Image (cartoon, rainbow, N blue to C red; front, side, top):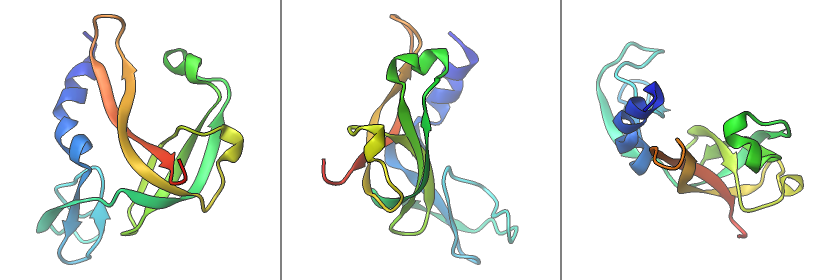
Length: 133
């Protein structure tokens, strides 16, 4: 088991639920959750669930991928702004990389990200899927 495995397990709760911190003073939302607002130093917060829809703000296409993701290449990574203004980065899936465009409507879905071999830990997270799919 690698060091990645224990970190992965600790972060499951907010990753499964797309939980974020919304701070009282600034009203800003941060994902992953933070204990202190970096702008105001505020520690008073509420935990909110992020919306599951948004639009792509920017993206890039990975054509030469790291060895763990070589079988997926080429694939697109995008930053999407969700309907509440929070921005997330994730892989765009279920469409050809040539179809990915700025302004494209996407949904956030929970999917398998990677595994650690045949008997290793399966890592799950979120990916963007075009809304037309």
